[in-house]
Image (cartoon, rainbow, N blue to C red; front, side):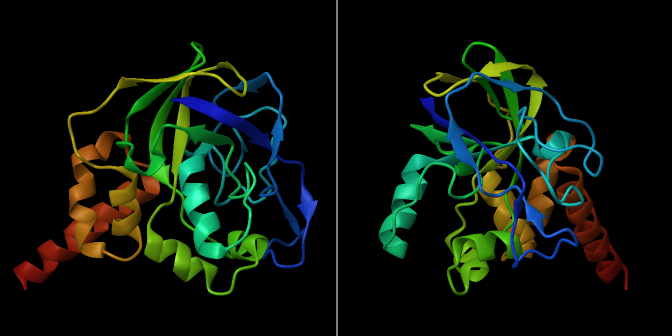
Length: 226
């Protein structure tokens, strides 16, 4: 289990983004490293957890709960077969392209030790957006990505340090609950009835997922009362 590639981006101007300045940081490119990884700060005011990596739309990306995005090389390979085109490391805008790991099957709150230094905690799934769809250039991409339900995982930075390609990854903590990143993704997108199950991981959920689950449960209670 290892980091196959560490990927960062410089701001890039594109015509498919909804951002006023027309900039995106989705064009991640592999770097040799080492790259400093640290907790970036609250969403809205801070960007990526990787030094030198651009996050342009900070209302929806970056911040403590989305500091590092990981996607499996094995899943990129499966997408290559489906789409009939090559996908380089970083093609999905991921910071870490992993090998021998399944970010989507990671438990919310699971912790990874990377390279003996950095400690990451799984926090959320990646929800597709128009920028992602425009970047891939695949018709109906948001629907296709959502239906396949292999979103990869966002991580918080618990302990900072440096990472580089080839770093070993060790799973050092697995919570007692069964809420995976993939389950969270399905609950937030196509299977809303799963939302109450997310509260088993309430303390470590992304704040937006926690809010969605609580609202759903509250709504069910109101309906029963009526």
